[in-house]
Length: 400
Ligand SMILES: Nc1nc2c(ncn2[C@@H]2O[C@H](COP(=O)(O)OP(=O)(O)OP(=O)(O)O)[C@@H](O)[C@H]2O)c(=O)[nH]1
Ligand SMILES: [Mg+2]
Ligand SMILES: [Zn+2]
Image (tube, rainbow, N blue to C red):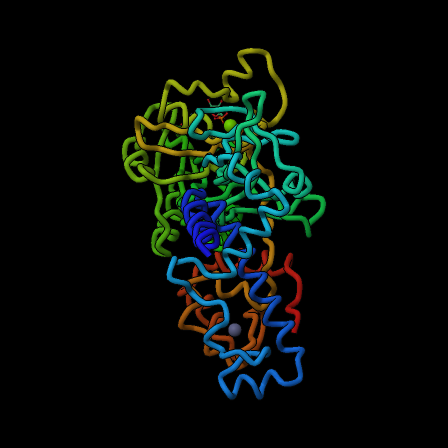
């Protein structure tokens, strides 16, 4: 009897000494045991009768079923610990201390993680490695253990707060994650060279809405003299009316950078946009110590090709309280998990005009369509409506 009491005490003490991760492992194992027990119990013919009488299948009073005991541990938790002991996994888990980190960059089979031990290369636990393409992304919050060689082994991925992704350009059903756990998708466009492309912005705007992060537009190269400048600024005004946050900056002449820094402070952001708009240049101006390779420095060094940044990298600018992911430019941005009937909901200017004659109206050429009316009366900007039609053309039909 005394021995049993001691064992109980032992269970509790050991449970309390486990890390949060290990506790979760034990508790979920306990939940599985409880569930398996319930299923077994419901197989018995007289379970219902017994239950009505307040007794369990064995005829014992139901109150004697595993319950919260005076020592604070449920029987199932104790059972789960004993099971882990018998399989020798609890000690293994206890030995293996897990640390938290954030993925800074990805390379084949692993990448670089930033954690309590500073920056180090990581590899993935075999189960995770199988999913690597979309399984671990830049910005990922992970749990790792230290390997004998001083590198990290990523054992678990934390729940993501946001996921910014696009379909693979060649295999559209395959999701390519660009960054996770970000607060802002900061789209960088240039006033000119490469040309300002509002159709491209409209797609990324929708992708950002789907991601769970907020969208910010950063118009770079404002120092350039450009004959269509007014036209571009008019487009920006329209986006402002839609509630989009916009910064007009010049990385080259350090214009508007302080405002941008202030806005991004304390948040995690990903810089995205076409190649050559100045994403890396902006980062260099934000934090000159970074010295990231840009098109200019590459050309001076005799380099060729279209893209300068080839790999997404998370830059931790702790002194400025800025956390920014620089990405390689992309040429196109298509949308995933959205069909023809859903697209209209991503155009806020259509809101309030949804009382079309047919409520499944796609606003193309239907009679009595209030959106078409509003375009005609210039209440909806025609260029945006055109963008809607262009995107609609690329989307699958609704499943219903
Ligand atoms: N005039 C002007 N040129 C700029 C400005 N910002 C960047 N550039 C130039 O634009 C070119 C492209 O800049 P990058 O920073 O390499 O562009 P990126 O968006 O990082 O390109 P990728 O890495 O290929 O995606 C370089 O030659 C920069 O010098 C700016 O504010 N004004
Ligand atoms: Mg770059
Ligand atoms: Zn309509």
